[in-house]
Length: 197
Image (cartoon, rainbow, N blue to C red; front, side, top):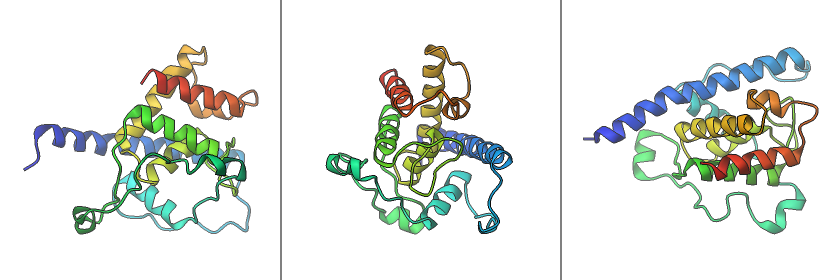
């Protein structure tokens, strides 16, 4: 029988997972209005079953993993130092994704490393080369099995707080897409948020 703390964590994950997904959906809706998809793009597939964050992870599993940029190769993989998520017997029986527990600080550091390895973009979650925006980095790190929706949501809050301290009290996605925001600014923001987490 699960303890009260475990039950509370599960309830919190169930609540926060949809909030993160709602942010993704709002971002995609805004991006679609600003950049309509090309006619060659495949039609949207039917909704996948299961919790919202898991549906995103399943969708990402169907995508081929992006190839890291050559400049990042000498430093090793972006998840270096962390174990690769491996399914346990319980994961197999319950048909759930394996995860590696990470703290909010570690999630932010992994996001920073993911962007360093794959590149940064604006106006979309990720591009064909694998470059991601800040929200795209959240999703990719979470889909790779590092952390939970609760961890990702706490990291989003830490980034918002860091933006406020830096004098930019705006949503991180709006800040990410500003013409004045640079790749260096994104790394500095993630490191500042991690330092205070």
